[in-house]
Amino acid sequence: METKKIPSSVFGLIGARLDYSFSRAYFSQKFEELKLKDHEYRNFEISSEEELFRFRESVTYDNKSRTTQGKPEIIRGLNVTIPYKQSMLKVVDHVSDEAIAIGAINTVVIEDNVWTGHNTDAYGFGKSLEPFLPIKGNALILGTGGASKAVAYLLESLQIPYLKVSRSADDDDHTIDYKSLNKDVISQVQLIINTTPLGTQPNDHESPAIPYEHLTKKHILYDLVYNPSLTLFMKKGMQQGAQAVNGYQMLVQQAEKSWELWNM
Image (cartoon, rainbow, N blue to C red; front, side):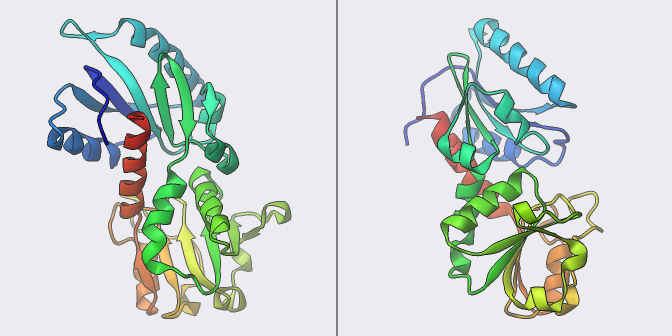
């Protein structure tokens, strides 16, 4: 794929706490390998939804006037993480069909100050799940945030039945609470996906409250958390003989899809 020849291009990640960020290190290395010395990836920590709207206004202004060492500097794209994947729907000018269907945005393309929201999480999750297909059973999605929506969208496309698990049940959204997880439910499940931030550094002593004692070697535990690379959720599953994988490959795949969108 050919890279757009736009000087002093800036990309970045929007989120509430970004000290653990995968994206800046990944894209900084990518720019170095591609010898894109005038490309930069930054972290934009946003403390509230109101600040998110103010950020949009500042980027619109800065993209017209921003310079670095006398050269024009253009913000071309953004990644979006917790907790703004759903809030971003209210900020962008256009939303892709897939992002509308998922109900969350994790990638923004900026061209001529027009913001278009996309979702590359579903693509990344699907690519990373390929080694474990076909899934011979149901799936459990732990959590109901923006990432869970992308996971649900992908499972639906693969015709894998699933239930969401949250602190409170919601029959209209196929959601049960953690107290409802018992041996009977777990026995009907093969794939369990943690889409919550539980277990992320520095809180690596935490894990979702599921009955790990009912897991067996037929189960696959997929943790969207990637730091640490071996989470407590994964460890507890492996102790019962289950397979376990973290979210690193999903991040790589969704990042590459973001890069593709920014250069279309």
